[in-house]
Length: 254
Image (tube, helix red, strand yellow):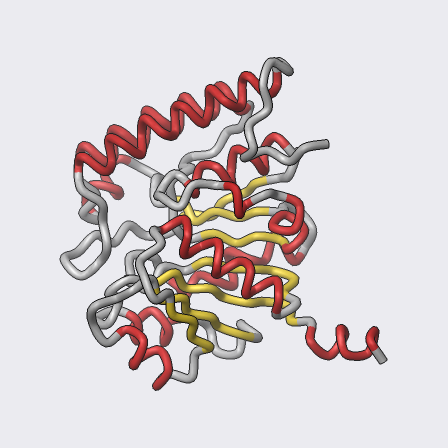
């Protein structure tokens, strides 16, 4: 009986949306997701002050509300926990602020379905001109390039971007990584990638359009600077772990 219930519960693709004041862009993001691609779409609202929750429920999304703002990383922790509880095989994170083209979700998850990668990223950095033409501020582009080059060197990868919010994970990645110990802030995105690389998971990427506009969420220069410093510190923790000097809680203990 137990085995039968688990099989009925299992879902191949679960989309999660970490939301904060996404009232103006949620519907457009949802409507661009390829029809019937996702077995479930879960929105986690992080204490929005607008009508995000009302619109999510009207769309029929499974909606979970944080009574208080827990931060971007804290939101993702809830998203992934709920997705795994749904029995997801592949978990896709899509920001509901319409900054990322959700119509490309099928392209994003295809390499995972084919067994070629464990994690897929939607990279906004194909060329400098495209990134800037899409509205990415120059300081964000420069910071992105600087951190990505440093990360490729230290982590032994060859990715074009580590800082995208359009991502897909094989469920075994989320089950293995101690993501509940990661930061509740924006550097969560780097904790999960650096920890995954340390565990030997394979990361691929596709190119996605750059869309910066007034209703899309974007952190300030000061928050970006804090995020950059936290990313560099995460790389330092990775080096210490590889050298077996110190192993941070953001890495799985073997």
